[in-house]
Image (cartoon, rainbow, N blue to C red; front, side, top):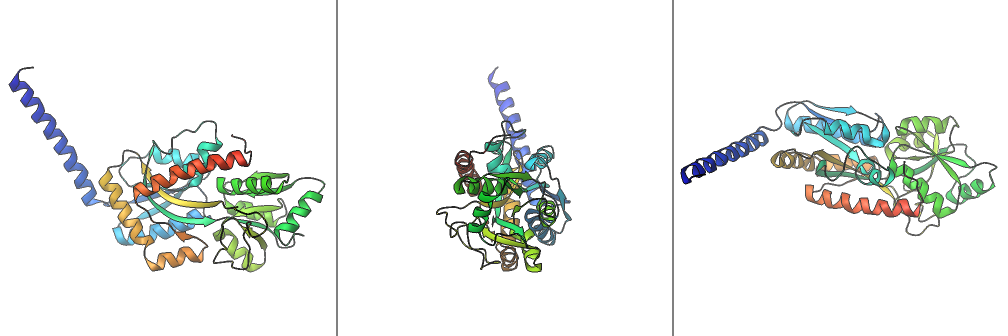
Length: 326
């Protein structure tokens, strides 16, 4: 290539790069300019769904565009994850998901149809949520000690339902620490599991505070313990599993926002600013706290590091609880 041709080619490449940068910046400046869809991997009535709907209302108010919630439950969040990855990476499809898809699944499935780190770009953390061991209101055991004693005396293994990997992990870890034989019954969402609990089809259920609070107040179910290392603000009289005789026990869920990996970084920054402003608003913080959750706003980089750290933690949990991969 002669000198003039080289210069012409370099100028052409520079113009293309400048054009691409202009389009990216322009898209970010105009964002949002159309409907945003929040994809949730759990059904309506779950903690993740309730949080997403609160965010959708606030995002619509701030962005002045429609924001809808699209529930895609099934396969421990894998169906929803694939739906997000098949969408355009333009910021208008946001994955409001949990540690199920972005920390636990990689340790609990032999193969995944996606890579949580490679295929997604972190936006921000949203909330941290404890799980709760719930039983039917007339269940014989009234605390963890009695539950353990009943389980050991029963002629057949007791069961615990779970609607996500955190619930499953907490149940399996508790089973291992307590030396019990308890069978896991998986559900697509907490509402279905709690319905079966009240119907007597399962003995216990690892519920999230949003699903459990109303039923507890009605007297339909009773919560024996929470899986966090501190008592839940919404149920201050319920002890932690740690307080019930298991030092160091803690396994909580977290909710966060991700987008497809090729989403322009300026758009990611715009989404982060929108969501963190909502999470830092006292009204939203109060709402989350009323559901038993704690606000968890982060930078994209902080969320990425946190998810990577929690993935390693889940590997240790899976090994300690002797959980089989699917």
